[in-house]
Image (cartoon, rainbow, N blue to C red):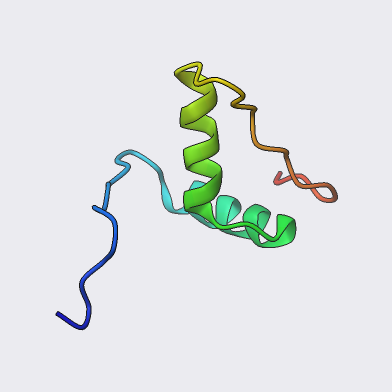
Length: 63
């Protein structure tokens, strides 16, 4: 199938639109995508070896 994804898609529930937009803006500033930041956080959270919290972008903080 032409539109088949390589990886199984996951859904995050309960994230309001503003949080989604803030995350999108922050990851764009940091030059990384939302999925990469999410994976990094999950790996740190479950204590995978060598996992580190994703770095926060510099600059403006959302109000």
